[in-house]
Image 1 (cartoon, one colour):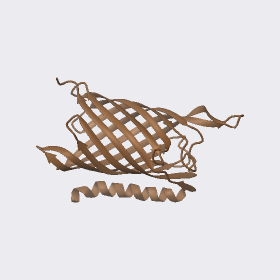
Image 2 (cartoon, one colour):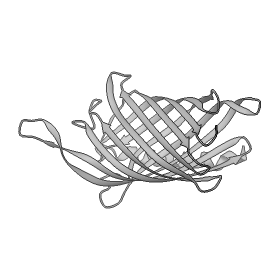
Image 3 (cartoon, helix red, strand yellow):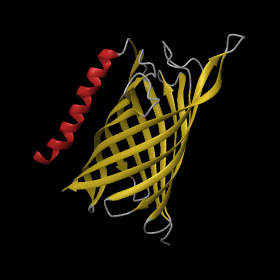
Image 4 (spheres, one colour):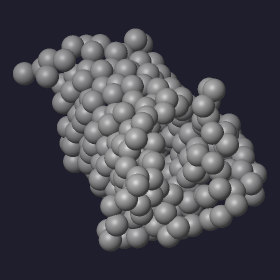
Length: 254
């Protein structure tokens, strides 16, 4: 139990920080989200892998489209515990909710670099992930006909940190079948064009996962998502269910 104190304390401090930030937002809205998510990793050597991630997200059940993205990346395993990644993401965020954060669909393209550090405490796995995103976000402008369209792109920089705990609940022949996950991810606006709020987003994460075999995994998570808009006038507080399918293939082995 003592080995859990530090990661749980960190999660608690993040949640306190969110509470302070919530007080500053002028208006709140809530959407019940459903996310469908895929992540696949493909080893092509003992150190190098290629990954692909994609998602389709819905708000208010599946009645409104919220967002989709595609995210290819290249990973390099520097040590047993540390992996470095460089990737690209393309997003489209729709206009959803009431009040809506966006007046029209907002495209975004960015490149990112990431470091992932894994350590263990007996059966408990603790993952730390730090990502720096170099973002180009579409800016909606009102046309003469009264419609909004993307007129230009703003450069913005965002830093993301995630801590994730993974603990086995059921094993078969020393291989984990059923496991629990618990964690938090915080998104921070940084740089000269950071907007009116330092905190961009936060996700409290908890759920279960099941390994069918070494290549296929499924997870069902509850995520409580907070999003602050760029001007810090609106806060979304969204209860979210995420269903994730994960594949892991080693193409160096026959």
